[in-house]
Length: 202
Image (cartoon, rainbow, N blue to C red):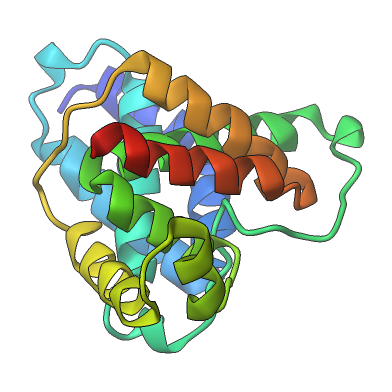
């Protein structure tokens, strides 16, 4: 590892910590995630990395999301980047808002990459916005039992290596619905987009 590679990690570390902490909601666990990011950066073939900052931010977000979906954390209530929070004046801190937008974009990308439409819809509504299974079933026009099964399967797949193909249009639709829901709790459009995704996949 060169001094340049070390400097890239050190300079990005404060931002990486904020990303990890925003997702896991715990200082010590965020630090643990950064240790793993450092190990991955150390082992990575950096000659193929176009943007060290993007590589490190993506690795941090994915490790943090995988972490909150672990068996231990499924028994807790983590702070995840897509979950609605109390309104905050981000205009006073543009850097915080930029990092929040990036975290949401990375989350949407991961959901599209790891989950088929049915599991993605159920998982987002349940884990992101705490919908009861009965309401998820009504929105997706499935049984309550099926809704529970979809969420359970999604929890397993979110940490798996398998990727699903998706196009930029699908990403744009989900992101445009996802961001307002995460920021202000505008869930109507998100429900519509998720349900429509099932019809497109059918």
